[in-house]
Image 1 (cartoon, rainbow over the protein chains, first blue to last red):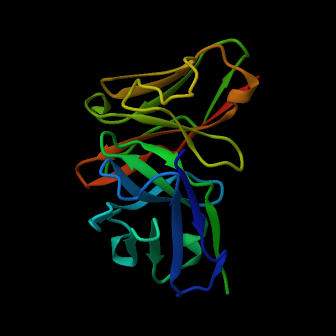
Image 2 (image 1 turned 60 degrees about the horizontal axis):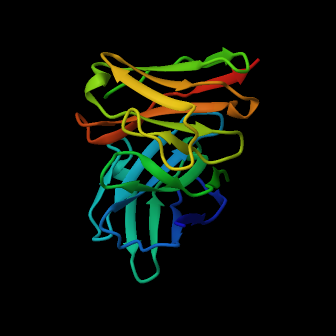
Length: 120
Length: 108
């Protein structure tokens, strides 16, 4: 059964870069039928899609975040990662990684999420 | 940017049917997906492509989509269905995924 697990720092200072990793288990990140996504949720608020990557390395991002975000993949470790530059208080959120099927735009499998707080 | 409109809350008595609307311009031409999120947990996909259910999701959950409104229906509501429900689509005008603000379902 496919599982995703986020990891990374729980606290980031303003203006610093956030780096998170999502480890995929129970399946290969090289699946030709899967995209790998990051989604976040500020406390008490709704969901915001951040971006997506295919195992080949092709990416696309939310236009509102594109200038500060980078997603990469390491197929040898079955992981994909998120970098968010110039973090601010508004970036405080639960960050989720998710698997999206190539056949549909739905996010079928989610990690448990990791809370990131931006504070000095 | 494409906007999805959901009511903040819906209340329903146990055993009744909860209907959660998701409004959007010509949303009937898009594939709509629905997620359930209980407090402190990650979202779970309950309906995808308007009216399909992932394996393990009870048949009580169903969806429809026409015109400017998509709807998630929860039949025979149980206390365990209390959660936030989000609709989601692909916005092809800006090439990104969009979520509704979420609807909190309360079982009376």
